[in-house]
Amino acid sequence: MIEVKNLEKTFGNQKVLKGITTTFDAGKTNLIIGQSGSGKTVFLKSLLGIHTPETGTIEFDGRIYSNLTDDEKRELRTEIGMVFQGSALFDSMTVEENIGFPLKMFSKKTPAEIKERVNFVIDRVNLINANDKKPSEISGGMQKRVAIARAIVNNPKYLFCDEPNSGLDPKTAIVIDNLIQEITEEYNITTVINTHDMNSVMEIGEKIIFLKNGLLEWEGSKKEIFKTDNEAVTDFVYSSELFKKVRKMYLEEDAS
Image 1 (cartoon, rainbow, N blue to C red):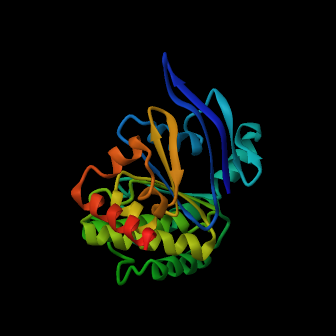
Image 2: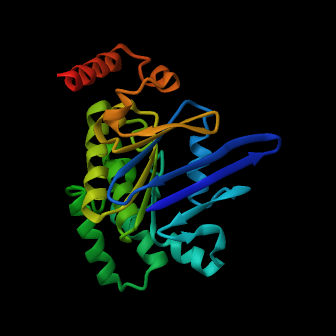
């Protein structure tokens, strides 16, 4: 579980985060949504320790990040997996080498143990016959699977995903969404996903927070977002006719 209390972050004279308080539960897919400039990226980077908020706290299962020593922060980082927007794979490394990289850097496993663990996660994300291929030799969807496998190879307690469906076709995006959700539930990971993809909201939005102008404007589940009368949320979510139809369906089901 990650608990955020009264988080504020300012750059120069601009306050980007304005007192955000929320909770991200383990075993659930927690989504951060909002328009460009809403503070999503700054919020995610604050959770990762890249930005240091002026006020407020971030607790990882009771551990307040700002109170940790440097050694404790390094230890916490070994419990975090990250899926970057562009996958961020090493072009010169094979799939197997990319996935094994965190184990070589942050664990004391032997080469044989690393290979065993890498093969386990390769199988878990269904990467068939890809061990010896370079990123340029596989599809965008497979690259995302590699990125997910690398993020979970160290058995993280916390998984952060920045626009994991960026650049993917709709069908592949759904597959990646479902894979992230399955892994989250299977290993009871606290997963936080920064996304603009409303299909992800429909598919895996167990907990959604909507940011607007640095404020937490709304939070709830994927079912609740289709029933809310919050004008800022409805303006953002129902900008397409498709989602207007989906909302109508949810409301009709609730009424029957």
